[in-house]
Length: 326
Image (tube, rainbow, N blue to C red):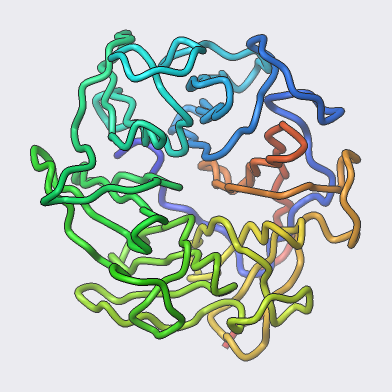
């Protein structure tokens, strides 16, 4: 199966431990530059072998961490800002394909870089051109066919690149920012589900939109478009993932929490992590969550950005079948 794309089987009534375990970075929230520290971590990726990849933005590198280690290996970028082929500048998205190539949103260089296995030399797949603009990328994913999806927040759009093409196809947004259902305002995360529905964390509009294949009009599936901390609201949502039930998990950035929305939009969300109402470095607290991913077991990893760490929240499976959700 493709790397990082698992057939999840999460029960509808599963819960997660409220205390996270630090898997990368310093538990006390301090910035660092060694291989066991992070500085401004952003997007993460987890492969089929539970290997974690971290966009260590302000250290201009991608770190790879095996599941039994909190010390990373630098697999892309050399730790100094630059635009040479072996350098990155503010990387904000990472994914690994089934061939072991590492694909990086090299955001401040306005290019998408591909690193072959065991190579530190990046190959440019796409960049900012007059005929195919590419602004500040906030997130990057690939699908089973190696299409690349990036969120371009400068141009308020999500763009798809098919293999061997450097011309982006706009899937959502585009043009000036706005709050219409065909508009986005400083979008961050994107997610493509098994049915090819696209989800976008429309951060500046404090909502999550879902687009059916081929549609440029989204439906609001989380948040109500106004910033707030109620369970019907989001405050600069940064990232989303969707499970096998269609439930949506949101890194609710400025609320310092992760919330889960079911397919019943009217019911609002449920806080599942960072639910203390305060920020801090305790195991049950977050400060500016930026990204989140499932591993193949259903555990959730969260980039706790302003705490300079990646937290793992272990899934707690029910002991008996879940009540019917119908």
